[in-house]
Length: 119
Image 1 (cartoon, one colour):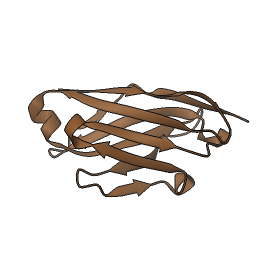
Image 2 (cartoon, one colour; image 1 turned 30 degrees about the vertical axis):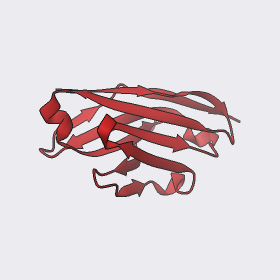
Image 3 (tube, one colour; image 1 turned 120 degrees about the vertical axis):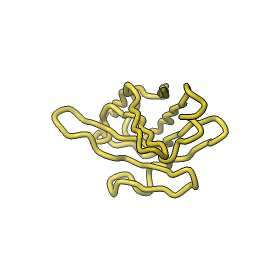
Image 4 (cartoon, one colour; image 1 turned 60 degrees about the vertical axis):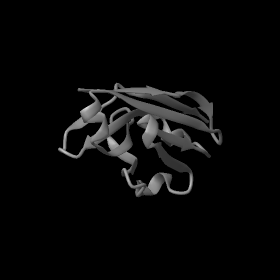
């Protein structure tokens, strides 16, 4: 089993920045087999959507709405993924969920961290 521990959410004014962190822990076999790590978000009344993802090799994917403002990075040695969020907008307000998929296509979700951007 693998657990994800998220941190870094909070309240920020529009134009501000936040950094989210997500650390994976648990079965060494499962942790070593982590492939893609990423961040999703879900705003009230909306579906969960991909924000950004990063593969074990460092390839990244971003939602169009966050390109140029958010940066995803990863420390494989610490099994940790980060999401640096700059120039935040009120529409970025959502619960942000950490996600990982391992080489056996097992998917794990974090419990979520709330990001609130005030105008």
